[in-house]
Structure formats: C-alpha cells, structure tokens
Length: 96
Image (cartoon, rainbow, N blue to C red; front, side, top):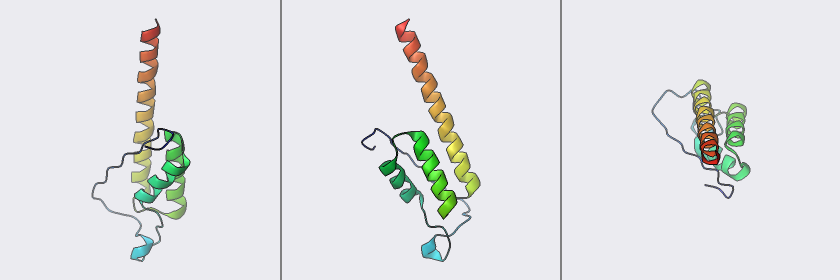
C-alpha cells in the first residue's frame, strides 16, 4: 500500500507469452513487478494505476499477451465498480 492508500494485488498463472523480455532476446521492456512499482509511485487511484500500467505495457511491451492484460484490466474495473456500489449502498442505509 502506498501513502495514498492505493494497493495492488497480482496473481500469475502459467500461460503462453507473446513477448520475450529484453533480457531474453525479446522486445518487452516491462514486467508486472516494474509496472506495479511505477503505478505505486505515481498513482493515487486504481483507475490511474490501470491506465498507467496498461499504457506502459502497450508502449514498451510486457510479457503477457495484450488480450490477457486487457482481461485483467476489465476485471479490475468491474471490481472497482462493485466496491463503489457497496459503499454507496452502505452510506444510503446508514443515513436513512
């Protein structure tokens, strides 16, 4: 968790990678660890983190397939919407 209360969780499973890392003779410059670190340094919101990580992965390459990364982003956005709806519901029920 960073000083702005943003936290990132990551779960990796085996799969086919579309890009090899630059250290392995490929063109991908970013790994999920670096993307997460940059997001934690620069972002205060989950939306900012998703946009930053997605943009960097597309621009500089990342070891996951783009389709897999987009699916992760969609899952995150759906989770954010669910949490927001829960908070709004709890606020509504506690005030009235």
